[in-house]
Image (cartoon, rainbow over all chains, first blue to last red; front, side, top):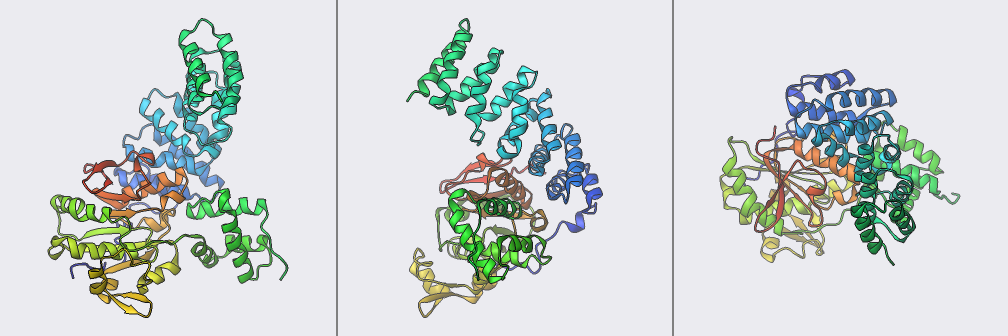
Length: 212
Length: 280
């Protein structure tokens, strides 16, 4: 029967590994020339042993993230940054939303959506950021964010937000996820921006979708 | 022994701990299932309270109790030739493409995770022997892994209930099994052909040795993971697969919702996912 049993343990990457698997080795491997070594290093960093190591790895991953061109490595780095759950890691991720690199921004948005419990405090900060584009990105994250307070945050946002683009983004998300609870804030928003036909249209649609 | 109860806070604490260790997330609807097993183990270890037992789980150097509890907490229900259309896809589309692209003489390697009691790995072995003539010229290794050491023991033993083999064509049953009382014993040739190993998919130190696979079957496991653990698992499979290798998920699971690293391949029998050939 040509089904064969592996004669020994599956081949290990141990012999190919150039760096020891301690903290220093993982940091050095993050700069290895081969993407698979960098992916392994980034993945292993998720197993940080204590807060100091978590902070060290988060800083290294964030520093490397912007110059990493290999998509598969970036994806593992982003996953690890979210899994580390370290506040500095998550704030650093949020900072990446300020970059001009659209691909990286979109990857960060995706990554932040995947860990709602960990990223919720950062999202709240972003919703209050001085830069309107950052507030729009935060709203984009909320579009598929599994957190029970999403609607509440969006209602709060449109109740005081002055920027029409941010409001329009929030209304779009409420159109998809809102309930009757959103209606008073939507109606008030329509009164605040009578000169914006696009927003009026979006609000009317959201009111229709959130009707009983 | 006094009545042992698991408070809301205990449940939350345990849920977080177990998630970090296994990637498995229990939602509130699983509360009864989790409490029942925790109390069972608190009694068996004579810990007396959740607090003492939780301490044991966290500090025991051998992790033996964590393993025992994990065995109890994992669901192991499967049967032979479940979702057979994917095995059709394996022999009709996936393996022919792998053979065509293969540039070395190494065996084709298939990883089945979770193994559960071995039905899926043995089904693949039977399917290859019965429906893929190229098996006479190409060597194939099948490695089947699970986090549950108890269920791996059952897989190695290869003794199955009538319900477990009910979907299998009678001819295969006659050829590869023998009757033992009410049960069916798989033949030694198949038992010897599949390697069963213990792996926690959420632990990089467990998975880093798993490399060079051409096909991964990971069906109906990731539905128990949360989004970020699913994404991490997808990235683990990416490194486990050779460039051009394939991953088959359960019918309700979609790689596109976990990771952008794989390409969707629509074959006549099934939709599967492929690591790009040019991947490094």
